[in-house]
Length: 250
Ligand code: PEP
Image (cartoon, rainbow, N blue to C red; front, side, top):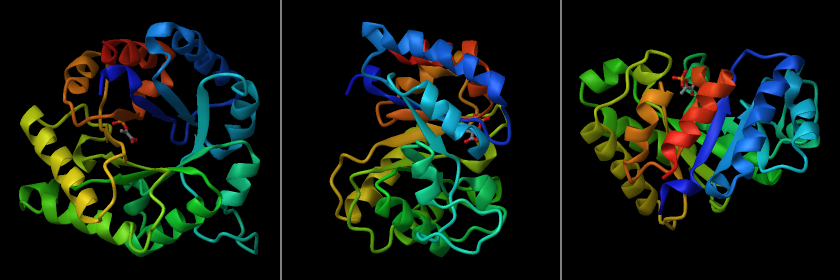
């Protein structure tokens, strides 16, 4: 695989308002260029902006996603919650599931498994996040944690067609710290081995997330196991996001 068919997922977290759509439009110009055409860009703004983003990017190569979902497939009495049916009806094609900021708030592997099942029902593309905390890394538990998160989160899933994995070491998110190349290569390979053990084919993309910036994108994208980036902070700035895509594309 070359680096010009990577997937770049922008996670805006709890940021952004209607006027910020113009920031995202800059991206559209870039990825129309031949050199970048095979890359995929997915914007995951807050729920409140999904519909406007989807309308604005209808005839472009930019897709829109949600940052989370409720696990219940059907509509129902769940005040304040948004399920995959609602996400899909607002025009999104992707959903991030298992982000560490939500795992920290109490999302368990079991709950995430239900969320994945409900996203599959709606035919949404899933970015399933996994990653160890600093404490777990220090205790040399990374491999066990990654395995458990994958095996439990993906339990009983038969249809892997729309699933990508985002490896996001929790200690790298929003800290400006990225794992050493050797560590990243090792953990990305581990994830691929576990995915094979789950008897799935190799077409599941594995992304990296955690302090991806214009100044480290080129180096990170040379790691052949990395097939895309999940980008938080830097994706809020259109110029930085554009630079990350440019620097990752050879
Ligand atoms: C994230 O929130 O998934 C993330 C990777 O954030 P950042 O790029 O800011 O580290």
